[in-house]
Image (cartoon, rainbow, N blue to C red; front, side, top):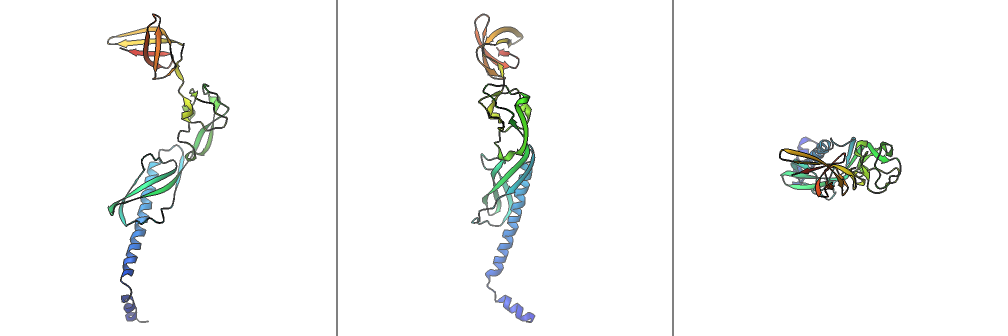
Length: 234
């Protein structure tokens, strides 16, 4: 076959063939750029997570029709977070505006706390009550604790079985003052500070409101502080 024959046959091809090639090339280029934009977004957004992070990206909807795009803007939908199974949105900023949502799986390998024994309601957590265990934090609730200092000294809300992941919502801060406890009452105002004694009328953690009955029988409200102190400001 000579060159003239080849050119003649190409000229006879349907006119939509070159257009199809151009659309396919543009789509492949756009998908590659979308993948790169998503990968960069995930790398940046997961840098602060507590552990070794890896992630995988799920498949786009096979029915999605994506026009070529020159600029992408990944974003996290309202209420979403990059932890475990998540979804990331990607906006095309031009020339045609569209949005697509991509499923991702975030894995965070690190240490977390489990209970070393059964913990009872009202119990104060001690160092002997917790153990460190390694695993995928992304498969656990976001409230799981990763450092013993986050648990030790806190009070158990409800009973927790041995070997269970320890979560922040299962604990409360230790009482700064307890009902019936003798407390130190510090009253401050413009140019004066008065120290007095009293009895706490309720339990309160550091920063909560505590009511105190003074030695004279007066009931005052103040801010509970660690060590059995209640601050009253006038």
